[in-house]
Length: 413
Picture 1 (cartoon, rainbow, N blue to C red):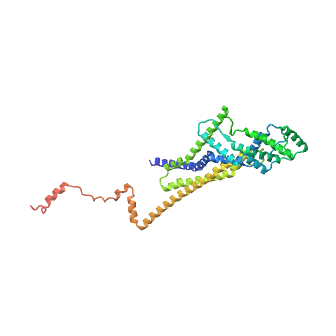
Picture 2 (picture 1 turned 90 degrees about the horizontal axis):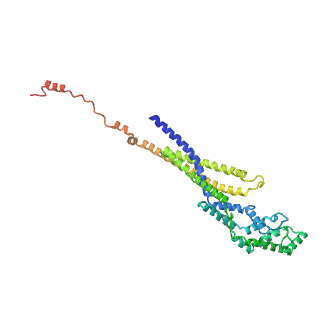
Picture 3 (picture 1 turned 180 degrees about the vertical axis):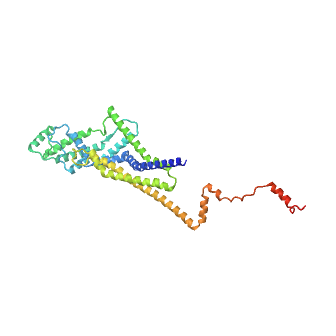
């Protein structure tokens, strides 16, 4: 029986150590999962990160500006030169970008888009209806923004030669441009060129729908199935992250049920485990902070594309990861303080109880003996009962009868 009990206790102890290791590993993973949910599935956080992607200088917004203006008034013209924006300096480029796509408009559209995506994930709707509100853009361009943009572009071009001016003059007299050469004529011809480009650009702006579908009209079954697959993956990711947050709580409960019976055991199995898990998580966060950016560059960057410049997509992805890491580091520090407080508090309590018992022994040893007797096991109670009476000689009838005959003094009559 003792052997069976000893094997059982040993098995419980081994199981407790296994669960403790799982607890140490799962604590930082649960914290990272919690912060990932708060970042990945938060429309405000993601919209802010994506807005930074659009607002980066030399990033997506400037490319959208070039595509928007080129399709507005240079789409139908044969071009002799490559890019009308290559002559702009940094200040002029920034002014055109701010005039066409202001920062407030970018942030509003991105935030509205992510809000729509989060609502779409929580519903059974298969189609994703994202829309862009071009109403403020049209109002700004029709109120003089178009003229300002065209004027800045034309003034950035190099001066025209005499032959180029003759070609432009002949083309403008016919109210059409047979060839577009990106050069700035002199005098009234420059004003006529700006007015012509502005007229064409304003016609393009008026034809833009104020509420434009971002993805177009999604009617193809393949596109719908692709959107449904994306939604399924996002929901699956959310489910796994939410379950991962519960693992430390479950493991901590199992450890308590197996081995924790006193405050000292609580400090050892929970306090130390909390501290070790927090230290492991902080080490993991620091490692990702130092090595993650280089790994992300190798994954995202095109080796022959940007020639050492940071990719805009990398900036967005890394800023999102960095939010998770910073929040997780703060939570891990709190967990370490919690574990240290639990360990130190229970250790101080146990030491105080030991000190109280030692003082009682020094002051009143009898009281301590009475206390120990009061808490002694029931088996020792019989030892403290009254002693047994002395042995009595067995009763003998013959001895009693002989005593009557031999003792006449006892019976005088």
